[in-house]
Length: 426
Image (cartoon, rainbow, N blue to C red; front, top):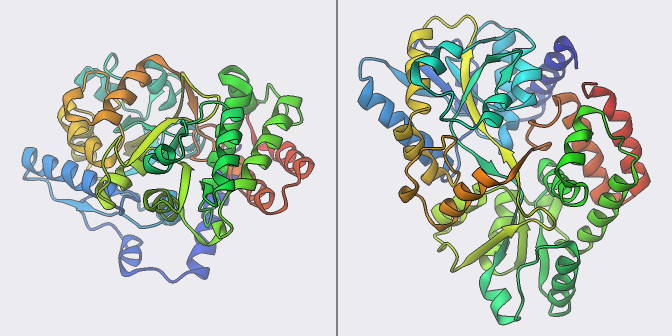
């Protein structure tokens, strides 16, 4: 997508959100001119993520007490509000000192292509990071040989969470294939238990399930081809995935459109539903907010068909062009990319460290397992979180999936995705 079109789309979203919603006082403050402090701009305001960010900022203050720092987080699921505020500020030449951005297309086809970011190759060389982050991960934050951001975490998007009590009482095993999923779902439905919780008040959650079904049906290689324009969305494999997704939707809660992702996770926690497909920030929510015990109250498996594959979402921070305190920003990025910084942040967030040399002992059973599997699995970029495809396509895909959840028309979904594919790089 051309950079001016991309920025126009995000800026339009910003104006719509400003007109249609009443902003909190913190959101209004974030749109003012920067205060001169080191602004850390993110959407981390919920349980786990906020705790992790505060731990990171505390560590930075300990190491750099002379640098004033400000937590400029903006609330909103998956960064919906924050991204709109950010677009407005960037276009007004008032960038925050550094901001949260997903590695992959959101970074590279967005802010880098728009000429808004400074390269960080010198920082990577200075800190010795080139062999501390996986090559595939560095590639996700690079364009034309230049590195533009520092990953602070790794989230896995292909996780099926389940209520262990429900599964034990009904003598069920967590499903690893689509056939197993439907057998389990049928048994649960007969018992009057909602098999799959969904909260798609914000449509990205439904898109997450769809991308997981795509990965589980197509396999890693063909999944990657979709975003490169090397496989058409009217391919029989994509249609098969859509049919599978349609069948899965017959097992969801009827009030899904009025719930958010936390509500859906809470349904599983309380036993109001048996399963939920969500990124592993859900684990942070289970543990930090709901006080559940790992592998006792809840369990997890890769989503059907995706064993040995890893749907990756990585939060990163970079250096915007035009900031006056660039040296201080690099000091923050140095802490963020350090072993100490990553191990202060990720155990609280529910994610795993982006570095390969972090202290595994600091992580719970889920974290240890995921760290191991991240090193061994094939990586697949998330569509729902802006890593696999440009913003223009993601927006249209969210709209198409949102309609599909209600109407369940496979041909309409395929046609909509085909039309949207003009947004993909060829």
